[in-house]
Length: 408
Image (cartoon, rainbow, N blue to C red; front, side):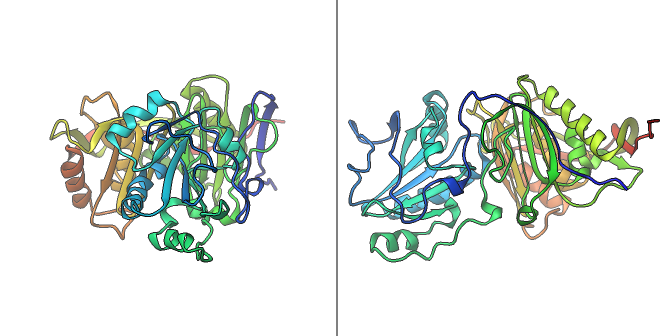
C-alpha cells in the first residue's frame, strides 16, 4: 500500500534572515522592539518615529504590503478607525518593506490615513516575528504591547479601552486571518532556520488550517496552501479547474504546495510543481480540444474607475469568497480565470487589455460561493466596465488519468 508523504527537495543557503513565526516575536505585555524606519511618509515634517516620541499615545502598528490582497482589503476599515479617533491620542503607523517608488504612487490611488513607515531592510519584520501579513500590533500609552491581531478584528471600542488602560477583549487571529503569504514561503511559519535556495514541497495541510486557502506567485516561486489535488492541477498545467476532466480517483484532503527556485521565471515554478504532483500522486495529464459553452469577456465601459492599473512591482495576489472577489497586480486573463471558477464555465478574454490591474468586485448574492450567472454578469458590467456574453467555442481541456506503472 502506498502512503502519501511530504515530498521535500531543498538546498540550504545562508544568505539572509527569514521571517520568524509569531511565537518568536514579542508577546502581549512586552515592550515593543524599536521603530527602525528609514523614512516616514505622511507625517509632520521632521517627525522621528520612536517610542520615546510617541509616549502617552496608543499606537497601532500595521504590517502590510501593496501586493497583499488582505492588506489592501483592510485599508478602508483602518482608515475609518483613524478618522473616528483623529482627536484622540492615537497614532496609526502602516509599516511596509517596499520602497518609496512603489508606495508613493500607491498612496495617491489608495490613500492610507496614517503615517507610512518604510522598512526596506525588513528589520522590524524580523524583530516583531512577522510570519504573515497583514499583522497588527497595538501598543498602549505606557509603551506596552496590549494586542496582536488581524486588522479587521480591531475595533473603535478596543482602541478606546486601550486609551482607558482597560484589559482588552481582543481575540487572537484565527487561521482564517493568518495573513498573506509570499511566493516560495512555507505557510503557517513553516520556514525556520536558514532559507532554501531551491525547494519543492508537498505536505498535508495542518488540521487547524484546513478551512483556509491562499496562493502567491512571482519571481520563479509559488506557494499554494490548503488546496486539493484537483484544485492544484490547474497550476501544474496552466489551466483552470473548470477545464479539467478527471478519469481517475484523486486523493482526498487538502495539501500545501511550495516551489522556490533561483530562476526568475514563472514557468520554472509551474514545471517543478507539475513534476512533483505527477510523481507524488502517480498522475498523467493530456490535452484535448472540444466545442463547449463559454462566456466571452469584452470591454463595455473603457476606463472604469474600479479597474485601475496596478503600481505594485512585487508579487500578485487574488482572493475570493461569497459575494466578493479581489485582485492585486492581476492581468485580465487572471480575472477571467477567477470568473471561470464562479461561473463554472470557461471565460475567454477578448478585451485586448494588456495592463495589470487592482480590482475589487462585489455582488449581492453574497451567501453563495457560486452566484447566479446573471448576478455576476451584472456586477462585472457595472463595477469593472466589462461584458460577459455566452457563446460556444472550441476550448482546450485537460484530461487527467492514472500514470502507467513503470517496471521496477
